[in-house]
Length: 286
Image (cartoon, rainbow, N blue to C red):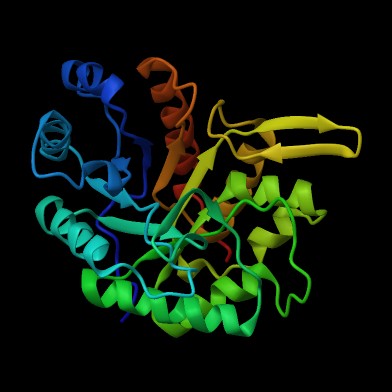
């Protein structure tokens, strides 16, 4: 299975919130695309699904999963995958993605996207699970790099090497979350720019941008990927450097907590669109 060409334009998009639906319907903003979490729409009907249908009539759509638990030791839940597949068949999203994480085990589901050890055994499990998911969905996935707050003993490879190997072995693409890279770098003591530079451009199908918060403890600062603020300047700078290297990619502004009024979110999307437009006129040097 190959990654192929996305049907989402290489523009900026926004996470769709029902609170913004009326503003979007009234103003028909010039937004490249919208993204939703499919788990919020795996229902038979009702106003939520109707709102998504109205949105899809006017805009391309991306489905960004949070429930496949691709890092679990068990194989993906087949019923969950079938419901996911019904949603993709109905709405024909241009991109489908999930996370390098696990969140379910033995019928128990957790609120967090939990990290994996960077080992060969873990890589084998994730490759198996991504392959199963892609076979059921009948399309390649994009897999997102995590935000990291603590490391595992016994790591056998760097996270970037893990993700690259996953893409090479399964045919999936990569979703690079620049804020996650910045948060992880600050927490774990590595340089986010060097981390992002390690990814081949041809594997990257989408980019995420978001804000974070800083917790201050006696031991030092801890950055938390909260998606609750505007994109901070260091993340914008990393984004510009990444796009200058690989060329424009579909780029999502994530703002999931303390969600602002629609004009505030739309301004962030326009800022990303401006960067993409400016850098599209320059040759990428990946």
